[in-house]
Length: 363
Image (cartoon, rainbow, N blue to C red; front, side, top):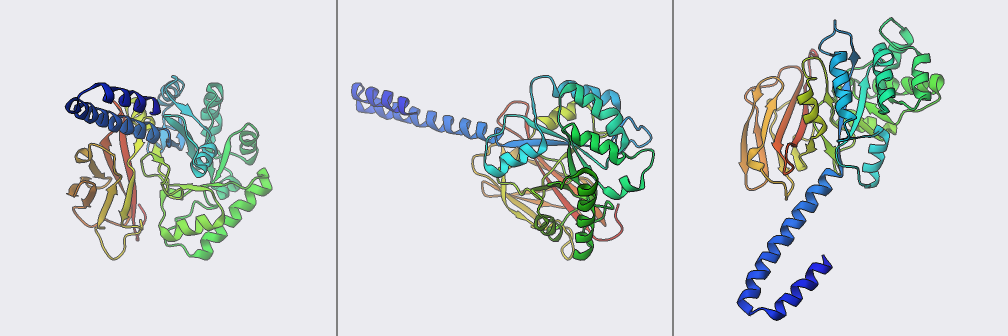
C-alpha cells in the first residue's frame, strides 16, 4: 500500500490539477475495492464449516444414516485438494486465540457413538488421513448393544488421534431440565470419560441440538471450550462459541451438491440478534431480527426458511437491519431457521442458522 501511495504522489506532480482529481477519484475507488477484497479474504480465513453425521450404512435408519456410497463420494470431495480438514479442537483454539484459519476450513463430527462409526467411517477416514470428532453419551456405551461402540473401541479411536467429545450421560433433553439434573449429567459423564479413557473432553454437543440461554450458561460454566447444536450454518470470529452450527448429513440431505455447498459455506456476520434466547415462551411466533455487518453485499438477496413452514417473509429496515416474520405460532419442539445469501466469492453462499424451541412434547 505504501508503494502505491508513492506512485500516486509522483503522478500528482506531473499532471494538471483537474487530471489529479480524476486520478484521485479512481485511486480512491481502487483503494476501496482493495479493502473490500481484503475484508472478503479475511472473512474466508476466519471461518469454518462443520459436518455432522450419526450412522453409516445403517439403511434402516434413513433419517440419521448416510449411505456408504454417499460417504465415499463425500470423502473423495474432501480429499480433492479444495478443502482444509482440521481437527475440531484446533479450529476452536484458533478462533479463541484470533489466529487465521485456511480458506475452506472444514471439520467432521459424529454424534452418539454408533458402532458403524468404528466399523465403517473410521477405516475410510483413517485411510484418507482425515481427522474427526465423536460426541459420546456415556450411558448408552455403559448399557452396551450391537449398534453402540464399546469402551474398548472408543479407547482405540482415542489412542489413534480421534477427538472424543461430551454429549451428556443419558442424551438428555436439556431445555427445561433443572440445573441440578444437568450438572449431574455433565459430571457423571465426565467421570466416566476420566475413568474409561483417562480424558476430560473440552468440547460439547447438545443432545438433539437443543439449547437455551440457561443451558448454554451452565455448559459454559462447566468448563467446556465450545458447544455445538444441529442448526445449519458456518461460523467465524465473533460468533458465540457455545451455540455453534453444524451441517447435518443424512440419506435425504447428503447428495454431493448439498455437501459441496456446506463445505464452501461462509457465515453471515450479524449483531443485535433478537430474540436472544432460543426458548420460545410468551411471544409466539418469536420476533426475529438481526443487523448484518457493514461491508457485506447483496443484502437484498437474503432469504430465510423455517424447517416447519418454508420460506419466511422479510422486512428490510435501513441498509443493514433485517426482520423475519414467522407466518404462524411455532408448535412444541424444535424449529430451525436458515437464512442464506450469495457471497462475493463465486459459487459460495453465506448461511445463518437459528434454533427455536417451544416447551412441550419433544418432536
